[in-house]
Length: 349
Image 1 (tube, rainbow, N blue to C red):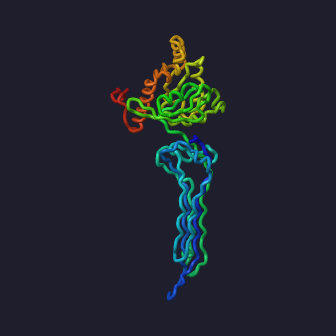
Image 2: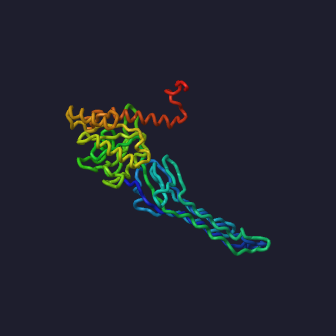
């Protein structure tokens, strides 16, 4: 299945059915009168977040969706049937924007969340509603109201616990393939990853989801390379694993490039908890490894993990570091009012 994280669609709710003009004409009935029924209500257009989807590819081939019109009213006070709704199924994490692609309408970040994109029109009144003491035989009925219509953008931001960031060929896809069952494309040239990949990692009988996105280069926020649009898929993560390849001549500069792109992108990415790792260390000698690790530590202000997906060195340590942050975030979300034990016995000042 192809990956698509953005789509533009047009939706239109159903029009209401027209009211009926009708009169009772029954044998042996002395007095008749108007008995035109009301029109049915037009169908709505709903969007719902469901499990089992991780792409918007269904909206690549169909972009127009219209709900059914309500049934027209009939004689004998029969009301027309309501029009059937249209339900659009999208992956969890889908955001819906107005036609300007900037104004957020809703964010469906939980399974089962629903939102009405377009409301169906009300059905028209039949002539029975217009009967009065001065108008015993009204010959008018209302038409149904038109349904709402709009053009919207669907934008998917994958739901993951941890995200991988780094320059192209920093070893992100190799790490994902090593620790999960995902099978991303891996090759020795830049931008082998052209769309995000998800995988479930397991460590110490606990699981969490990792997202791998295409590599960033300097100026990605200005559209250089393949841009920074895919950073949206790590906005929802709780922690970032920043991989700096040991193959880089200047690991400190490689680190600063990615940090600069995260800050330029915004949306809180630069403030997320970051775990730093020097990857692909199997290509270095001990002296070179010590030198580059020291340079990276000086640039980042923290000691990096030493990681090699090929030899599995440091992989478990990286997973445990990620899992620790993920579990702390999960506990904080589950108990938002809990007080950190470290502060319970702190003396008042």
